[in-house]
Length: 147
Image (cartoon, rainbow, N blue to C red):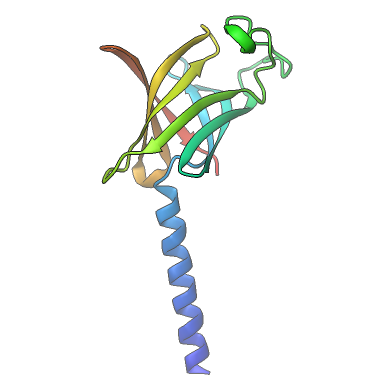
């Protein structure tokens, strides 16, 4: 009986450690925040496939947001496409030896512009710093983990 309890405890500890390790990744569901009003803007699900991270809008969260809102400011094939389901983050990879994911792009559907992106989990993975930049100009948002 003691061996079974010890084994069960070991499995629980190992499972908890893997959960904690997984949290230090941008993979998950995030709530983007309006930094001026400190209110939720959108829910974004970030996934990883083959070492490449991407993120799609799951829901628009602003008060009075139309769930069928189109990206009127977007360019090319995204012009007038629904924002919900739209890929905002693409082509991001983990930087070697760092807890930073970079090298991809992020779309700001409010202005239709695409920026170079860097994703950095902070506060034990409870928050995500999302930095978009063009040349020397950048802006960082802090997103909050939902899952």
